[in-house]
Amino acid sequence: MWDDGVVTNRSTLQGSHQVDVCVIGLGGSGLSAIDEALSHGASVIGIDRLAVGAEAAGRNGGFLKTGLTEPLHSALEAWGESAIPVYRKTIDEVESVFAQAGEGGRRVGSIRLATTDAEVADCETHLEALRSASLPGEPYDGPEGVGLYFPIDGGFNPLLRCRRLADQVTAGGAVLGERSEAVSVATGRVETSQATVQATTVVVAVDGRLEVMFPQLAVRTTRLQMIGTEPDPGVTVACPVYADFGYNYWQQLPDGRLAVGGARNLHSDDEWTHDGGVSDAVQTDIEVVLRHQVGSQAAVTHRWSGHSAYTEDGLPVGREVEPGVWVVGAYNGVGNVLGAVYGREAVRAGLGLGPFDLPDSNA
Ligand SMILES: Cc1cc2nc3c(=O)[nH]c(=O)nc-3n(C[C@H](O)[C@H](O)[C@H](O)COP(=O)(O)OP(=O)(O)OC[C@H]3O[C@@H](n4cnc5c(N)ncnc54)[C@H](O)[C@@H]3O)c2cc1C
Image 1 (cartoon, rainbow, N blue to C red):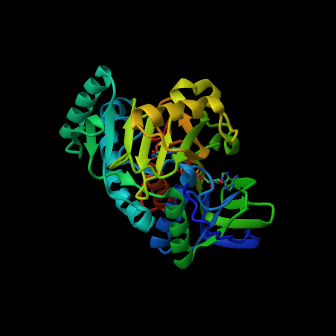
Image 2: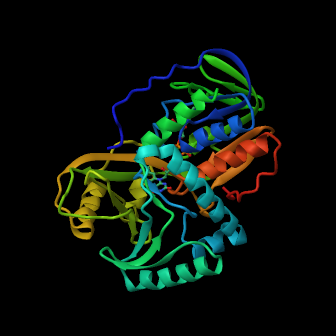
């Protein structure tokens, strides 16, 4: 759905290196961390066990959502008052992500659609919380139904964003290595099978399967599935839509194709898995959303999944796990913008430019 067929084929990192910052993970969060490090004049190496944008950052639904995982009023319960400044940081960061996305970005807003009376009531509480914090959001009553409209959000091609940002940081002096898995991470030193990187600051920016690298973290990875369709001229979806408390989501690309995801709430036990691929059960339920909620009969042309890590308390992980080694991840399924905020903050803290001033999960 997102692949433009341009194979970048970056080299595998080899040999011994010494840099200020080594970033592990070349998704949107790691690449943003690299961008931040370069902006402070640091020398940087970034590595990925697969490739730029190979995991969730390049395989998600292409929804650019400001804010936190939960609606603001729920986030205030989990995050406390810190939810509001972090929310504001996502509003600042989304500008950078739109710029990185280039022609693949669409500033069209997003809709939180209420499909039940309970969700209509929840939207009212959500709106009150936004208004008391002077954050953007307004009532929506239009072709999609009723709910809330978020004017700053939008859609993008997530893989293109990663590839463009990778090109940008490479042009800025960063060295990126693909097929370069970090097999050992310790203070001042990262090892792959073919390279050793000595770095004052190490930032691990991994979302899905984070617990594979750090088994001591109480995070769990879930699989999130999507479908994509042929262009459907009979349907118009003006902007990304989240329905059913965010469990189902869809958007229409400028060429008329639809990207639809969700149904995890119906199959959550089965989807706590590191397996790739898709399952018939979830795919069938996403097609129900496509046919009945989106109202499209278009043929399904793409089926895929990606992984995101979740925490019990709903907060991301953002911490120094040993001196000079920072870990950011576990965005609970909403890391396109939040992950960039966490990645940048880890670099700033690692370079001694300020404290790590974002909430950290108890995980
Ligand atoms: C289907 C789907 C829909 C989603 N919908 C949304 C949405 O609507 N809005 C939203 O904000 N978010 C959404 N998300 C979540 C979002 O995509 C992720 O939270 C975000 O992209 C995470 O990016 P990241 O860079 O932190 O991590 P990742 O994309 O996980 O990147 C980490 C990278 O690290 C690499 N890596 C892992 N281990 C190692 C190692 N040992 N050595 C070297 N490299 C390693 C991986 O190969 C990977 O490329 C969705 C995710 C999926 C899968």
